[in-house]
Image 1 (cartoon, rainbow, N blue to C red):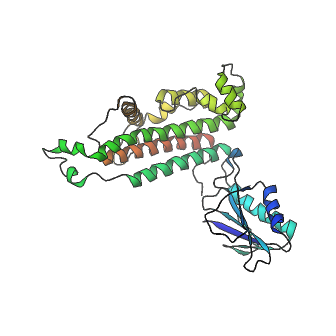
Image 2: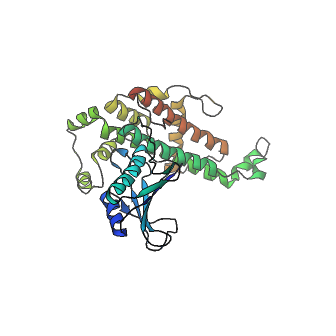
Image 3: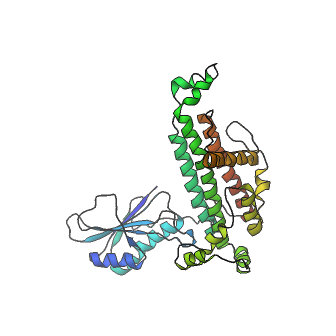
Length: 332
């Protein structure tokens, strides 16, 4: 649920409220809502330590009779504990500086947001954000998958089945395999960089490295275009099983190949994940490098592939949560 806190000061100008927000780290932004003339919109988001999930929206706006300026703050349903804490802090400091009162649209007058503690640390929060992004994209793609041509689909299982291969949607199905591999690559590369950035043992190992860094990477680090973790991640390919295994084994002692050399339920099947992943990667390389298209693909093949990607990621998350003793997916 989103939560809105609207603050009415005893004595504060628009400039006072704007300065208050800027002091707390808010940045000016646009807004989809049609606010009254003269309103100013802001947003706060803390990237460090992955404190924020969505951030805090804030708007300084005039009252209905334009006699005073008010402060509206909002966090969305997917906000982090850090986001909600900062929303409370924003109103708490405003009351201290300007007097007045506020309304919580869920709890009433002068009621701050009750916040349950979140056991997740920086690693867990960062991987959770990557997990949510990939999961949302996979779900969106599943929802948007086009249905096959009805007339051509009726030929499947008949002597004319070969004609079903001319269905244009089957070409599109081929194009979605690189998407599935990209989802895997994104999740595992991001997880690697997040763990490397925040794991003390990995940081100690990183400081002892004597591997040379290419000059273009040096300039990218200097200019803020890359981090040290980005450079290290570039040493590995996260669309290659052996390379993913080496990256997590060398830096964190995680045996990725052992995790995927097991059967897991994917849809109505019980495949060995390693075999399915290897087949997916090989198919993707065929599409990208040889334009090798399989006109026998059907919608269920894509659904099964996307399910496999989700199961693969969840298997990794399960192991990481058990290994670290810290939840990653929403602990609520």
